[in-house]
Image 1 (tube, rainbow, N blue to C red):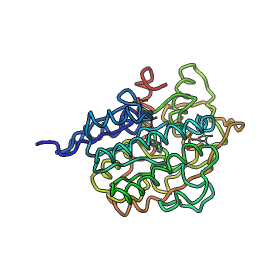
Image 2: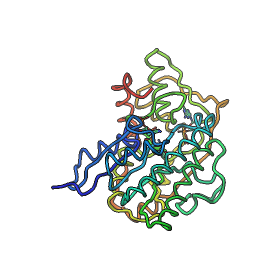
Image 3: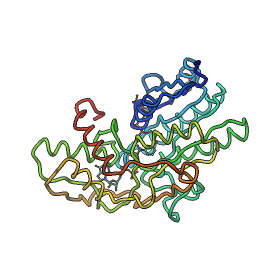
Image 4: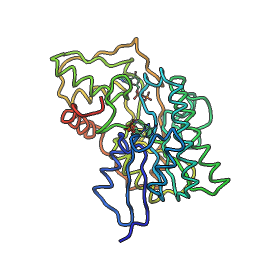
Length: 318
Ligand code: NAP
Ligand code: GDP
């Protein structure tokens, strides 16, 4: 059968992109050809490079994941880079998608871009209702502009551009660099290093009290594929586990320690920042539109992620 859709995934080498790749490889749908690209294929901060990439592959649909992404501490020290790089990448991908008459683009926001002072649970209508947390304002404002652009491209040119809003993501092929990583890959890397040196003290940054919803990358990947095939609205949609699945950073650290069978002690370095206390998001819209979806239990997904890192630490992104 001839492929009717050519689906270009930017950020194809990252945590989410590699999960989408393994999901689509395991379920192969007729009529879809998937292309996963990385910064080696094109620098999406550059318009000409972006245009050349699209001219080469002629996608009919795009999942736009590529971004400058990082944890709390990387954001705090690089707000300008997060703002400029992400704004440029998003502008180029959406503009070139419009010029090349791409039928559908799904871009990626994040629950950390919502207003810091807000009522809970957060829902899709609240993206622009107040300033984001000061720790990541560069990333947040750049990401919020995707939603503005999607609406403007639809209004002015009739484009079918939308966005999804994941909560914190984790899984195999994450970024394990201690300077720039998110909390789960950072703690997995740290504890692996401690155990390999015979240490017995696992230090977690901050108080351990902030609350987070964590989605396993393979679950998020399945939801992206569902959205590509089924979700046609410009309004964003939150892709998060339930509110009842929200846990503290301390509980996440304990689960990682259990997965490593670590018997030492966990301590908290309260001189380090906690960041946003919580960003509890409602997945009611997702539950309504895709009621049969089942999330992988956190314990199981953490064990898989720890086992993956143990087996791949020498080649993982460190
Ligand atoms: P990631 O693992 O850091 O991967 C980032 C991807 O973007 C890589 O494939 C990277 O390519 C590519 N990239 C970066 N700069 C580029 C450039 N200038 N030109 C072309 N490609 C570039 O990120 P992720 O965690 O998978 O995140 C994917 C999306 O989910 C992002 O939009 C992010 O904002 C969003 N998100 C992530 C989380 C999370 O917890 N991780 C939560 C909510 C939303 P190379 O490998 O070649 O560098
Ligand atoms: P956020 O959810 O956007 O704030 O990003 P992170 O994934 O970086 O999570 C930050 C939370 O985890 C803060 O409360 C940090 O104090 C805490 N944390 C504890 N240890 C670490 C670590 O090793 N790396 C990171 N990035 N955060 C950590």
